[in-house]
Structures are given as structure tokens and as C-alpha cells.
Image (cartoon, rainbow, N blue to C red; front, side, top):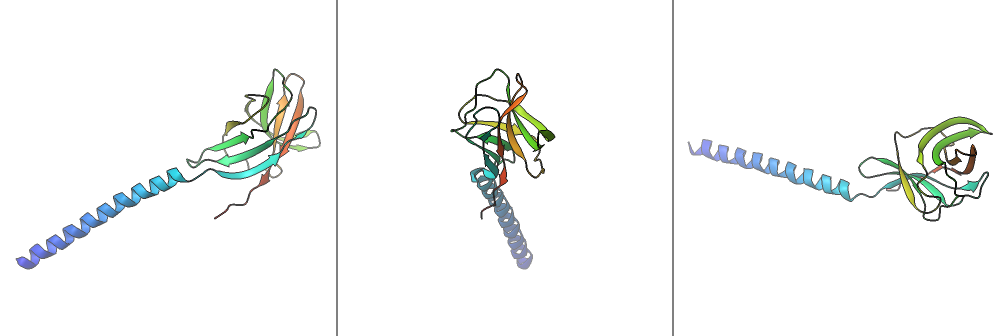
Length: 149
């Protein structure tokens, strides 16, 4: 009888310890995920095509998995009524890949845009496009950024 009671207590203690470990481990992994920082996947510097455009663009993977396109605080382009941001690949003037990201929020300063899906197109660029004049103001060729440990 004493053996059975002792065995039952040992099993109960093991089950409780296992459950507590799972709860603590789950809580730790969640907080580690929440504390991880965004990872820059690719970045590039703008150069003028038809209008003076400068600054940098970065494709960033957020800790929650969302993909964002960020324009730097030094970003600037010519003001126009219909400016848009595209992910693009060009062969000369021909558009090989042309994915709309959104309307440009401002002609200068830091801004970010949600990007759906990660394009695997080599030679990807960020294009600032003027719809009114049907011209690309500037392009930022994106270069992959190696992951750091």
C-alpha cells in the first residue's frame, strides 16, 4: 500500500513538473519572439530616373512575420499628385515585374508599406512612379542583406 502511494506521488509530481515546464517554456518562447527585432532582408539606394529621388529603401521582415517596405528618413522625390510605390524588375524600359505596393504617403521622409508575399525575383527594385506623367521618378535596386547570428 505504501509503495503504491509513493509511486502515485512520484508520478503526480512528475506530471506536475512536466506541465509547469511546458507552461514556462511556452511563455519564454512567446516573450523571446516578441522581443526579437525586425530583420532587414534587402536594401538599396535610390537614384534619379526622371526626377531627383534620393534616400534608401529596405524590405524588412517584422518579428510577427509581416513583410514591410520602409523608406528612410532621408527619402525625397519630386512632389506630384499621383505618386505610387512599386516593386519592379526592368529590362531596359520594359517592365518584367511590376507589383503595386501603394500610393506614396509623402514626397519626403520615413514611411512604411505592407508587402504581401515575398517576391523571389532577382534584380528587384523599388520604383517611385508618377501616374500623371507616366514616368518613374527614381529606382532603388535592392541587394540581399546577409542574416546575422
